[in-house]
Image 1 (cartoon, one colour):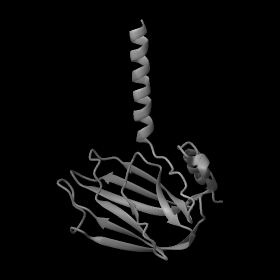
Image 2 (cartoon, rainbow, N blue to C red; image 1 turned 90 degrees about the vertical axis):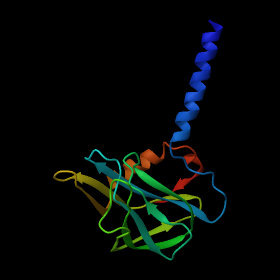
Image 3 (cartoon, one colour; image 1 turned 90 degrees about the horizontal axis):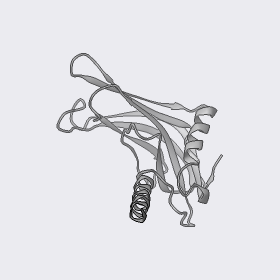
Image 4 (cartoon, rainbow, N blue to C red; image 1 turned 180 degrees about the vertical axis):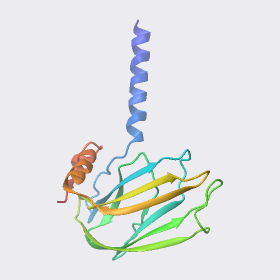
Length: 181
């Protein structure tokens, strides 16, 4: 009986460690002049392939070493960009760029399209900024073996922003940060 209980406790501890390491979490604040940017996203896919044809860059000014690159993921509600220097930024454009792999190719290899957006966000030291826009990506099956990837970059309403904030509050280390409103 003691061996079974010991084995059960060991399995429980190991599985808890594995599950908690799989999720997103916030870093411990370094005490410097940096914050966190969270970009909400929603990805849908009604095809059999989990491969996407495009990735995205969000360009902003003034530039910092932090690159905002979005790789479509059905399993994420948001992307967390750490170590963002405090300041006010302007999103200038969203760039989609074709990627190719063994089974898909987006238009011409390495094709890029840039779309102009004007939106501002502010990063405060030791605070989390949730962008007021969501990148929505959908992969739609067309006739035969073809599919199309669409996207939009639209404003969040208050209930959508609250939903994202509630999910962020469930992540590890969130209590070490404050939310910028």
